[in-house]
Length: 233
Image (cartoon, rainbow, N blue to C red):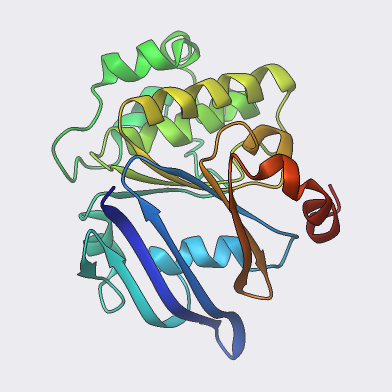
């Protein structure tokens, strides 16, 4: 498979705080990869660095072969990246559908509103509801749906299952499976290992701003003892 994303010796800072200490990994086209690790390990900072949203960064981040380390965030997005941050960023004063339509279409091949409503029936029902009236699960669906309109083919999903009821988490798992089946490439940060375990092709364990272990879905059963040690799961 072709490489969609290649990260090499990625260093990152917030001001004088050095948070990424040489991240090295890749994500192939059509693959689902999960970054695992304790809070503060550098997983979200890695996502933000890929999008150019960190204070400063150096190293190499190649998107389909193109170096992006010197590009502004809006130019990175135009290469087909969509970032769904942990805080969701739903605008309270806008309706669900206005939130959905807010981001521009950046590349061809994005989902239509009708396709999105077919995937997220709850959003069709709540289209006219203000952002503040949506449940946590509906807000999370909306946050993901919003980037699917843009034409992004690499989805960066940060803790999308956090704090949600099990029935909603199951719907999000079905969404990730469906998107993978449609050829999307997905990089996830997840604290909920039970959610991530059946979804990912590969798992990368992050500690102190570095990838310290990686293993495949097939290797998962034999690595559980190590995962308990690293993650406390």
